[in-house]
Image (cartoon, rainbow, N blue to C red; front, side):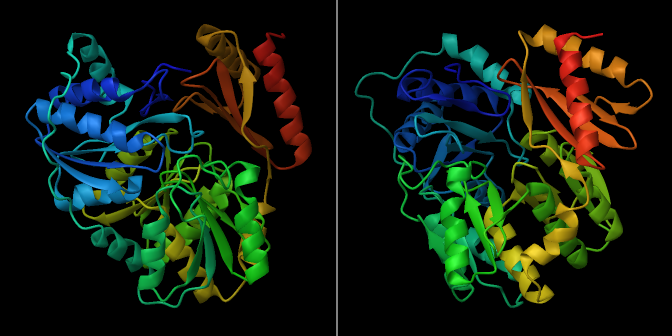
Length: 450
């Protein structure tokens, strides 16, 4: 995969699909595409992220834009500081949870929304062929002073609300979150132990994706060894978080989201809570039981952010571990560190182990992990969706994102991948037999069986 422009970001293997000369031209194209005079830039710990960020900055400056550099930071911190200080746009040099050879950019506009392919990256891509590269030896203007990172630390620490906090372990995966995680912990009396805090773009401890089993071992072991109440694992740019309970067992994103949604509704009674449509039904049920209003969103940051803004939601949860909060008015931001502080406060107040709080959520329904089902091409994926629809004519069906099917005994969502010839399937049901039968049915439909 070397094509750098994707549905939600710019990302490819360094030296094959992305490099500094391309970053410079992307900077110039962004300046021409976005209505922003001032940009805030940051980068993660990946080997070439700082250089890519510098090249993009020079491209922006070549188009007359003012640029401030936040340096090594996390995507949530950059986004928060952009909105808090009123920058017209921000760009993070990162490839998020991808392997170390990948690099790229995430772009946010003045509203705080992600600039996706549909919302502007397509135009940036179209502009590139006509944009000249950087002149050899061109001098770079100094970057402007960024807003202080302490503003974000104060925001994340504010999730405690003055309440006691349960002790935890936070594995930052040798990404860019180490210093910020330590600063938040220090501000709150040292409630967590930070693991793998040294930024290293080779990610020596384990892959930067919390969903990989290899990435979960260190936090799980540290929680058990130290008697911590919970663990949390962050990805390379510090925006995705996966929680583990006091036994070191992983808590699925829908279940940690349900617990945090309950805490948010305790603080903001009756609020809207946004979740993506692949979340377990448990999440919406828990939100409704707590007096909140569950709102479904298509999968992906840009969709969830828009749904939060449209419903003025207090909290948003992506199944993949991205968590979002309303700061004030129309100011919404993602923050794994805010979520970690809130989880610590929730556990201290509950006075019960996380595994005990999660047990009724984990055991309510049978679930499958996300299943990737190969297809030959996109048109085959669309034809398969129609065959699935035909098999479930009597079910409740919607097409908010792919195809969602709900029967009394089983419900599932199947969506075409944005980047690969795959259908992504999530199944949930009353029991394992119902899930297994539906999986066989969907596989048969994809294969073209009558």
